[in-house]
Image (cartoon, rainbow, N blue to C red):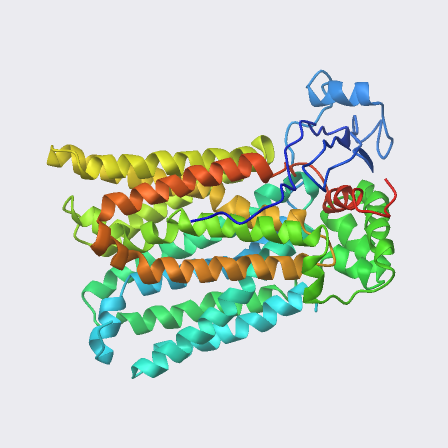
Length: 501
């Protein structure tokens, strides 16, 4: 496949964020775009103790001493993520639904076919509204007595899930504190994994009860109701409130979620970005072709295209075939192994993403996926049958784990981080549209390609795409760890003609 001409908008920079003060160090980018030095307005304050230094800024040297534990009054447990956690967790329920419906359709699908006789505005308001078709779709699918009714139910489920997969990462990126944005964003992937695992546990009864699939679909509506009710109590995005001119509400939410010391600096950053939009809050799709939006959209679409053609859904959808070769005949049990491995990788990402950074996890993830695919291809042709089966299982689980630690969660996190406040929704919508189209194509043609060329060549091609993805991430992805969305946006703008640097 001939690669289209592509600008190289992003490269890495080596500045390391600290708890005391953060500065963005930017290097020249090819042709047209670079990150310039941008001195952040935010000063992170460390308090020596509640009694002696409450609300009083201290020097960087003293703060570093406290953080290193040289002062007995330094805090050992960091719970700065806790205030935002309930809101993020509620929004992540949408990804639980996504994972649950994947498990439902991969689990008792044979029972469905047998019984029906066939073989083959505000972000919160958006989350609430788009959950409704998901609930209705689940109930309609459960009550279906024909193929058409099932398809209409699944259409509504897909409509709700498709919109929520765009809204949830945006919401989390806008309400999470900068320091914990990656870890809290990883809850999307964890929610998906838990949904798959829950559905597979529940699906075990479907092997003995051909009507159990209806019960599973009724159960699927319960998380939808929880999400609809829970989002009524979730905090609005402080950035959205500030953009709407509701400064008092924005300050209240920042104070509750990020801490009192962040209020003034956060509002100042928000306003410095919004003031450049000249009060125009409306956007149109043509702005995707403007700088730097089209470059972020190009990177976002490319990340999802590479993610899908690296074979993740081919492996997930048809992993049970690999396990059948080693005597694991239960599709639900095979999928459960995959789900647990996926969950273990997502937990690893939760702890690593804000420590190692997005770029490192993406590169390491795709390298691991590539090695795992080559291991499976080698195992398939190995003369000893037992060794062949063991290598295939090891490669499959290694591939799933590698995906879940980087390519899965980080892709959905880094795109809204790179997007401007005006175009974040449209860039995410474009990127996820690429995701779903590629997802559909892989699911549609995977088995046909396997029949034509065999499993080993297809998995080798997946491995090749994984290595290409690692090179892409090394060349074009910047590190966003520890930097506020406004810092990133202003650094992107600094290079545009006519902008003040």
